[in-house]
Image (cartoon, rainbow, N blue to C red; front, side):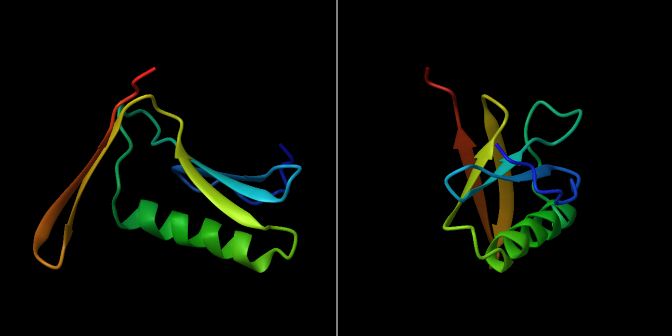
Length: 88
């Protein structure tokens, strides 16, 4: 992957691969799971904005560096839980 110098923001690393895909890897430091909060959402928005502003980017993939991850978010008064478990 080509690291084009976009700054690392807390949980997310931003790189563009040789095919023009922006790879946003999510890895909450010092935690067994990725945590979504106001700061991580802000960081993600910044990374997506970087990708959208780059004319060489043709797509964006957001993925976890962790084998298992879970997060919970309240949206419009409803609690939404996301769980991904490595099945390999």
